[in-house]
Amino acid sequence: PVERPRSGRQEEGEPEHPLEHGVHLHEHPVLPLVYETTVSLMPRPVDPHRRDAVLARAADYVLERGLAGLSLRPLAKALGTSTRMLLYDFGSKEQLVHEILAEIRRREEGLLAADVRTLDDVWRWIAAPEREPFLRLFFEIYVGALGREEAEPLVRDWLEFLRTSWRPPVDEATATLMVAVVRGLLLDRLATGDRERTDRALARFADTVEHS
Image (tube, rainbow, N blue to C red; front, side, top):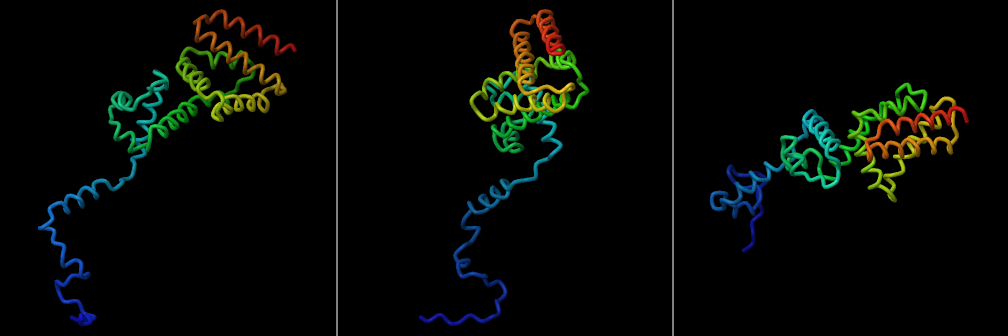
C-alpha cells in the first residue's frame, strides 16, 4: 500500500519518529537500567580542594617511602581514599606520579629563591636532616632517569642558577664542579650517615673555590 503523506500537525500522543511505535519501556526492563547507569557514569567536576589535599598527602607518602614499587592500592589506603577516587582525580597512575613530583619540587624550590651567598649556605640548607627524605627521592629519580630527557633538568636548573645568580660569577666548568661535589657528598652522607666527615670535606672544597 502507498503511505499517505503525513500532515504537518502532530496528533497528541503520536510519536515523533515511526521507530518509536516499536519501543515500549515497560516491555524492555533493561532500558531504564542502561539509562540510569549511563547517567551515573557522566563525569562530575573534580573538587580542586579535595584534589590538592590528596596531592599534598601523596607527596608526603612518596617522600617517606620513595617511588620504587609504588602501588595505588596501598597509597589509597594510606590516604584514606580509594584507587577509584585517585584515578577519578588524576586520570592515571602516571599523571598522579607526575603531579606528586611537581609538588615535591615546588616545596624545595625555596633554595633557588633564598638568599644564599656561599657554598656553606647551600650545604647547610640542602644537607639539613629534615631534607633527607627529599634527597633520597631525588637520587632515586636521578638514577632512574639516566639516559632519558627527564634527567637533564636535574642538572641544568642548578647550573643555570649558579651561572646567573652566584656572586661572584662562576663559569660553566666551575658550576659543574660545584654541583658534582655537593651531590657526591650528599650521596656519601646518605650512604654512610657520616655528617662530620662530609661537613669537613665540603668546607675544604668551599675554601678552595673561594680562593681560586
